[in-house]
Image 1 (spheres, one colour):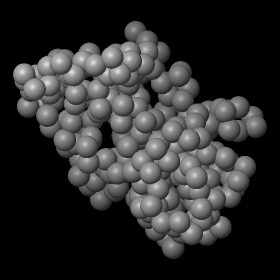
Image 2 (cartoon, one colour):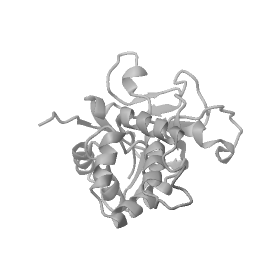
Image 3 (cartoon, helix red, strand yellow):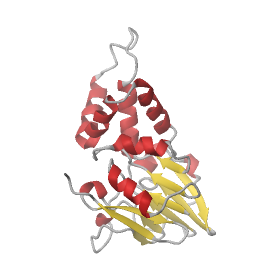
Length: 238
């Protein structure tokens, strides 16, 4: 089976429970379409679990991009050549913005790791895809984290800029592709659905799967083979 999941945001227990619920095994494939990191308490536990599973394909989210940039910069060796610019005013502004937007949990876990573990995680995040195009049961799907900004139907995905996939919120009332489904996270579905329920949104050739787990709602997973929806409610803090 082929599954999609997004915006796990450090919700490690819910992520584990979801894998158990779908009975995820070596014959399956899971696409995680961005924002594994930040906000929730255990983002790097999720990353380390994903690293052990070759059948999980990770796509880059805006939080993952920012975390990678900040952590990679902080993890650099300081030399006499870069000491003056290592913690520039511009970098510190980005750092503080990241921390305010949930980066503190990722940073906390990163500091607990060995230098080898840090390097392995950064290398893994560096290889995240910007998009995936897949076909399941003769149906075509385009997977991106946030959507496709500056969209043109005949424009190859390889011609878009990285920011086009990570920050723009899709227009869920507009059909992007007549013959494909656009699968996204990034925008919680309570902001898309008319009933404001934290459920998968499927309409106008869109499948939106961020059901706001880290905001107290639930983690969603969608099976592309049979269109089955799976949900795990956010655990209460203990």
